[in-house]
Image 1 (cartoon, rainbow, N blue to C red):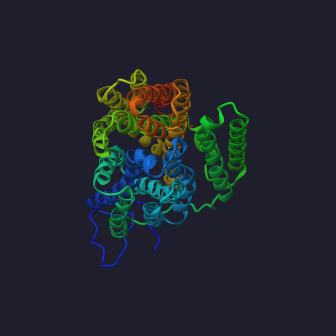
Image 2 (image 1 turned 180 degrees about the vertical axis):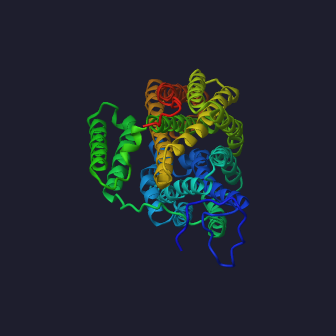
Image 3 (image 1 turned 90 degrees about the vertical axis):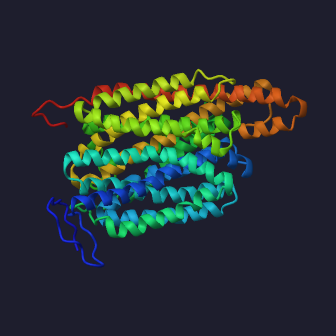
Length: 516
């Protein structure tokens, strides 16, 4: 039965047993649908954050170096980001509820595979499968949300709640990961996904309406393959750069290859009559500015979370649970600020919260960069609260603006553009911030004649040094913090550039003038 894309406010009769819902529904049922969508979103967000608290454990038990830890983190977000646009188009063509259910199933399979792995390479591959599932889940949640909530005021409120759940996931992930690692093996952080996906699948069957784009488009498989190849080579170049050398022939060749693939992708999209990414969308300066803002925000968030997890556990010596609990204040700040940003955007437009949020993030990163080897938790939590508040203040406003700029027929693609920029920012944040940190850290280790190329390896070598352990550990801590300071300054520069672009592009159109 074909689903209608209209919303009726009048009460409707309860569906008969076994009947599927359509988008037409009662007001109460819309909010039940939102609850299922938020649970599905939460699963993907928690997995992106729960992994960070386990990074020192992977370094110890799987003997993963810095590049291995970056790939464990980035294989998920890379697959997530690279496939989002194709997943959004598939959802629009074949049904958004079907895409959501399929994504949850693939995510569960990947989670089980990750729990059974015993090598770094196997875990990286399993995480990529999970990212593939997440690529179908996240855009489906937002496109279904926009088709269910047709009233602008209700839609803004629903997107605000959707964004707040992202902040909640940031808080739940580290704490849940710490609790699980305190009582079980590291495989438990993946096994916990199985009952959650089961609940989402069952509830979604009954509560999530069937919908699809009224305009069926052919799938751009060539564009999808080219984009995956381009982003993979770019990430590989950035992660491998510290070991190969930033100006080495190998690094320059990889960056050139990524550039050629990206150019090929854009050429394919421009010439295609059914592009995966309609580049004409970005003629709308407000949409382009919001997308750049989201990329900068998640670049900063993922890069700093990647570092602080290691600082808390390896430098400051907290257990995984203690480190997870110490990540709660920033996550709470993000969730509260997201609600505040949505309120300000409703009253004054998106330009103010997005620009101010990015400036606040840059300020927090600047404070983070003043850390030394003797800095304690108070320094990092202040920095992370400021950074997270800025991200939350800007995030919901930028997300709402992105979806408002698109017609309903492109809800799936628009949702995927929104999510792809967030996840590409996450991939690049871990790759760039992690690689800058690793480069400076390695040079400092060489200067202090400390063995090892990663934080975990250096600390293990220091513990074997007997009477020199204390002095070596102090040198290692100082070297890592010096690298982290340089890494977050790179993120601060990205956020300041994003603030300038947001201030320039996110002007509210004058009455009677439609944005291009």
